[in-house]
Image (cartoon, rainbow, N blue to C red; front, side, top):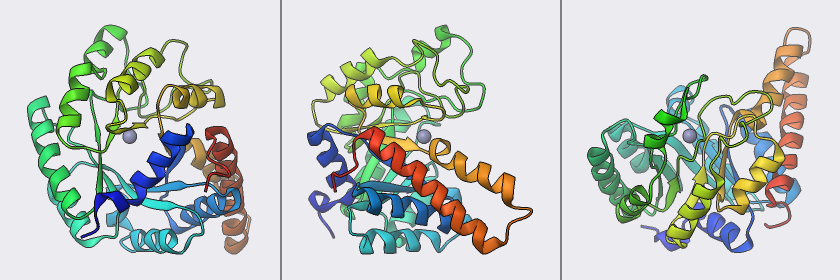
Length: 288
Ligand SMILES: [Zn+2]
């Protein structure tokens, strides 16, 4: 089995940590989006992590193979990551059968003790196959409404103890909870004070290069918020709607009237341009 020292995701992220820039970890739901993302990476000479959801693996079983083919043939460093894999048996199937570089082992729906124990066991199984592992500490809230009051939030934030526990569980990438949410912040992004940059900075200091930091929940981020997250230690920037909304919007506006081939061509181009813009913002352009 491939040693973890050759792991594509980790090589990309370690390069970014050393060079003090961020790398997009971009969700694709279909082959068109995959194509737009890869073209952006090639055009910008930027590293890129391609992310698929476990549900997409079930919906489109060949997409992971297409992504892996892109990883192999691209002229820039790419890797294939599975985001939010929550089912233990599905994770085992994924790592046994698919050419993935890294997996987010998301056991955050279990209690703390079970979460850590399952994470530790699965991290070992992934590592035995040369696959890197990401896990979420604290709890990154989902849902469009986010969290109502900060009294509840404190318990969900990543604590120094969480950091130690997850590093000890043998993971490679930590996704902390610093006020970030899965879902929409609103058109102007996170409210002032919603993201705890000081907490991110202290987590980064505590980690001291033992693992790499992933940031989830970047919908509606303005460029300056993204850059501040990178400054404070976030290296892997998970992006979904932040990039894909231009694609969605284009399709909503044009799907009824435009011929399919043209729709696909222009959609890919629009997504490519948006991705290139965010590669510039993250500082990864020209780094491949
Ligand atoms: Zn996430």
